[in-house]
Image 1 (cartoon, rainbow, N blue to C red):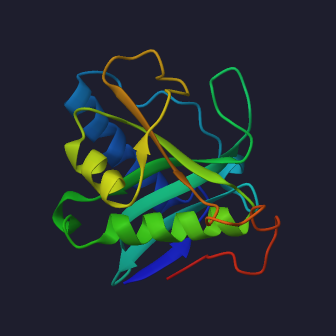
Image 2: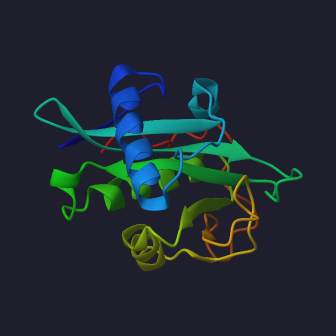
Length: 177
């Protein structure tokens, strides 16, 4: 298993995004996630996009993008998780947990202070994963903040007792596992 950074518009990322959008549409009876995303949002040091490969086959994906205080309810220092997904046949193997840990480490090294995410009530696996990794419910933010079936969660990236987050561009940025 290899986890490596790729551009958000890499062909494997596009294929996995198509699959996750199909799953969102099936679970929520709608068109999928309509959050506007651009490949530039996931370029270091303001973001990162990862794919887990096994024998050259892309199995899982996830990314983070920098957010700061804005009208959608984000706070300065936020790193937002986007497009966490594992193909059906690879679920239950800990891939999402490994990608999530790598994203957290990278965002922390980039100076982000809080990891945030939005998911929905029809994704109980995601809610359970995030809760087991220390994420807690927070005031809703983002495009789906007004939706009743939306759930927003967050986790501090600052260790207790730290006066500040790691400096942006720190050498400890995680790019693969």
